[in-house]
Image (cartoon, rainbow, N blue to C red; front, side, top):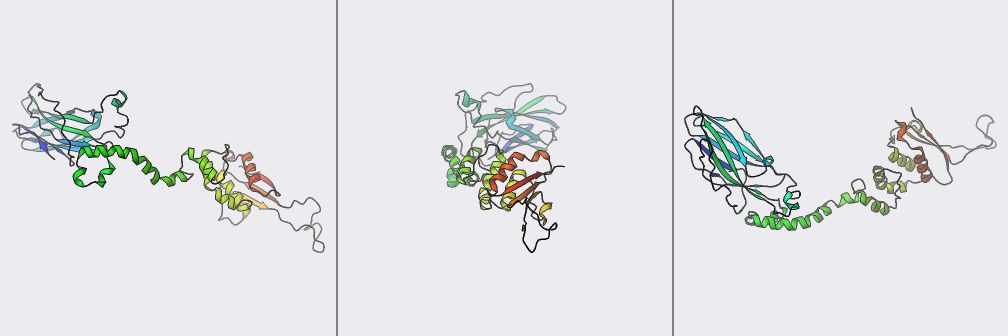
Length: 345
């Protein structure tokens, strides 16, 4: 929709909203008396409508045409709403005779307009309809006389309603229906969004911290205050995998990997070269007829079911030895013994 003032002798002003407006009843005229400044005011009150949704940018084009025979120096000023909502973009400030220049009014209302409006805290009525005026100050070259052309437009702040998409186009254009449906949308939409993102509540990596005890209980994983919140998330997510391999070298290595962030090094064939090295001590013991003294036999001191854990962290503070021992004691078979070595430097 385009509205404009009638032609003046020197400057023609026209406002064009860059969107189709809804069926909104115009507000009362707040500028019933033209203001007189030096050089006089040349204006007639004709309004146009612009609907702005919080956080979404909107634009209005201002067309200025010089109908005189001399250059015009122009400047724009706008009032009627908070100034930070609008930015004026101009190609220049001079219009040659018979030429036209376009300026653009860029509108953007804060995203939290309806939530943090000051009138809500003072029991006042929330202002969502603003009648505003655009002033165009211009000076004809050589005259030194400043004149003013102005135009009124209505600025409507409206929430974006998703439920309008389910109505015929005829009803989508009615402002009251959009605001009425917004009441139900604000009531039901949080529940709908929770259902759409239900998977995020059931994933320990993305679930709220308050949900972690429930998820841990779900997989029978004890919540240990010695673990950081980030480690708890990883351990709860991998609990079933750790249960599956408990009592094995693979399960212990995976647990230590989750705690220390040391790589698993599955691509390294030699166990002794890995960052998490777990070596089992095997021996046939003393077998008569096959044992060579001082070569492959040992009398006493044997340690069956024994293994050695060697960790090679990049930083000494990366490893809490007490916590590592707690993990090994928890994961190893009860009859096994072990040695722990943390190699630093």
